[in-house]
Image 1 (tube, helix red, strand yellow):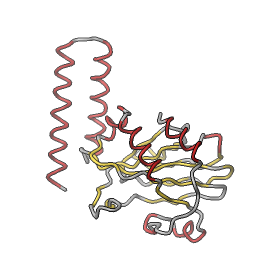
Image 2: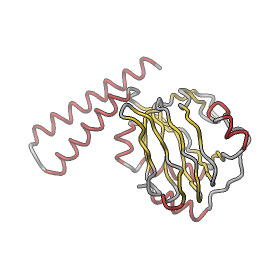
Image 3: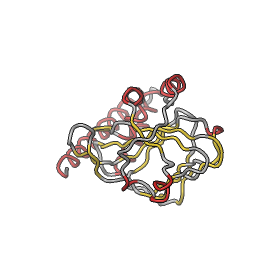
Image 4: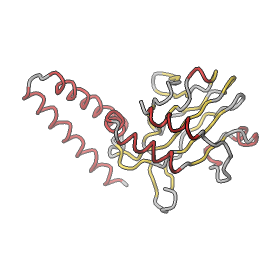
Length: 220
């Protein structure tokens, strides 16, 4: 839960003036023609999101971030949605000229589920379509290779932040395995169980992380 981000959003009221540099490659052309999607950056709110992420152990464990793209914000009103797409594999970090590989996509919900009807984030995976509509302040991360869309809003307003992560471990299956292993180690830590088993699992976890990080660097 990144509740401090939501509190600041309420104080500031996210502005809704569209920007002009919308990446047309990411937009459904019918949506773009209606001019209904608002996408923009807000440096102060973006820094607030990044600060909250740095303090969130579950995000760190699940994404294993090397770099995080500056968060962007959008606002959907009734009749607005976002068609099926897969996020670009590479983006340019603003103001740097550096290429950024998108391994993980992230959506931070900034409005409550009851604030709108529709607006679900629909993600396709090997188990079918996953429908995601979380409380304000909750974050979902998923492989950036996923086909996904935002269902049309039929009532109210949907506000969210979205961004991408270049992970220390680019392989989705390895990242998922490391997350499961890390959570198992944390449960052992909390339970005060077999110290030898905890140390062995911790050693395995960090050895796998080293392997994944080296693998990433060799293929950039």
